[in-house]
Structure formats: C-alpha cells, structure tokens
Length: 366
Image (cartoon, rainbow, N blue to C red; front, side, top):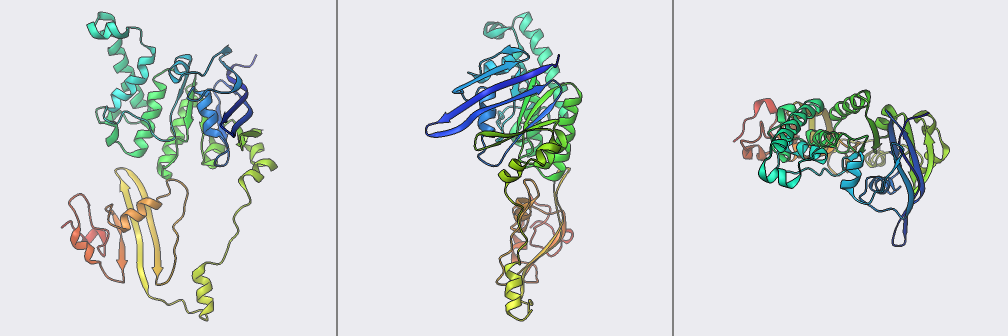
C-alpha cells in the first residue's frame, strides 16, 4: 500500500465574486518533493494558505497521513504535522536566530504556562532539549555560526534558511515551502537546492511553490499546475513541461525584436557613435561570501533607453545600487561621461570604495 502523507480533494475557495480555487486536489507520497506551479494569479498561494490553515476553504476534504484534519487554524495545522515558510519572510526580527527556531520547537512542548512561570524541573529539562535541538537545526541549514545574531541582521539568504530551520523544528510530516528562492541570486539558489535535496534525503516530504520553473523541474518528483484557480496538469516534470495546456497558460515564448538603439542607428545610416554617458566594466559586488554580481559590463549612450533584465536574484538591483553609490564594489570600473564623477568625493566609511571612482581598487572612502 502506498504511503500517502497528504491527500486533499475538491478544494474550492471564493473571495466575494472571485472564484480563487475550483475543485483542486493533490496527493503527495512520503519522501517526495512535490511542486505547485502556475502563472501569476493562478491560485497557488491561496491553495497553499488553505492547506496550511491560513484560509478556510468553502469545500474540500483533507487527510494527513491517513487521518482527516481541518485546516481551521495555523497552529492546529502545525500541531497536526504541517509546517510552512512564507513568500514574504516572517521572522521575529528582534529575536536571535536561535530563539526563532526555539519558537518553532515549542509547538511540541508539554510544560505549559505554569511550568514556565515557576520554572519546574520538567520545564528546565524541556528548555535545555529545545535549545540543543534548535542549535542542531541551525547547523543543519548552514547558519549555526549565526545563532546569537538577531534575525533582522542576517542576509536575505540566511533569513530564508532560518525560516526553514524554524519549520523543521516542529517535526513536521510535511514541510511546505512558499517560494523559498524568491529574491535569491544564483549562488544562493544553488545552496537552497542542496538544502532541499538534503531534507528530502533525510526522509522529509516537501510541498514546494516556486516561480523558478527550472528549480522546480530539477527538484520535484511530481508537479501540479494551476491556472485561474483550476488544476490543468499533474504528473512528472517531464510530462508537465510538454503538456499543451501548460504551454498555453505560460504563453508563447518572447520573440526577438530589434532594439530601439538599433533602429535609430539604422535611421542614421548606421551611425551609432553617440557619446557614452555611462560605462560599467568588470563590476563585482559581494555580500559577505555571496558573490551577487560577477563581471558585469555595459554602456549607456546619449538618447538610449537601456533595460537591465533578469530573473529574481540575478543581481539587477545590486547592480543599480552599486552604480548609484548605495553599495560599495569589490572590483570594476564605473565611468560617467568618460571620467570619474565628483560623487567619488562623497564616499562613506561603510563602503569599501565609492562606485563612482574610476577603479575600485584605487579608491578609498572620504
């Protein structure tokens, strides 16, 4: 007999006149990484919130490890054995990383309020065990060295890992990850993928919502696709990627168009020698050990509209912050009108170098 961890069926949810979910269901086997994907507004997060007790469904049946459960409250769902993370990080910002994980572990404690007030022997023993387990989980997700740091001081990627550690602290039968890679750069995504894969190898079952389709297809055993609140496909990553309804839902692939600068140059008989306003060469920016921008090069000429694009975490915002002086740079050359900007004189001690200097290695804070 197949070991089913989660089985939900016939899930519907309406918000006023909007039918957000219509007869949606899924079945997740123990040890699987199960992906839930779909275009923006497909109903993924609503479905996730229904399963984890944040929203009350209008209809549907819910079974966890063969036992019915009612997703009427988040804390009750956590006790039943489903833990989750959030698309928008929800940590206790002024508590330490260790304390955040201990909060997750408290869902399994027995001492209660009176034990905490009078610090009974049972309470003290439980707290010692909770602290020990919390430190183990911080080590497990790779941030053990940050145990005593406040959550708000951690890097974005470390905060994501802290949320996963807190979810694991509840000893869940199912851990539900809501867009864990959102906002991560490529290096952080590699670390996240390794962590999720390790959680699976250690016997956990995972439900994953993620916009990064490449990540989902590389990690998941099964995938469900939603569109306009309806389930349009379910199967292996291989089959889902080739499903006509899925291809239609995500829309046609963008076509290549001639850029505006190319059109203007063509209109001038091929003369594209307008003055260069901004030139970025070999730009590198790091956050601690994370290399967020690696050797970026581009130019902006007079009269051009230049667009910087890329997936979540690609380094777009970091590049813009470096150019405008909000972040220091590790290496590279940024020139404005082919000379060092006067802004180089306004560096601060918090930067390794003003990004308006001709070369980062030659600059020093004012």
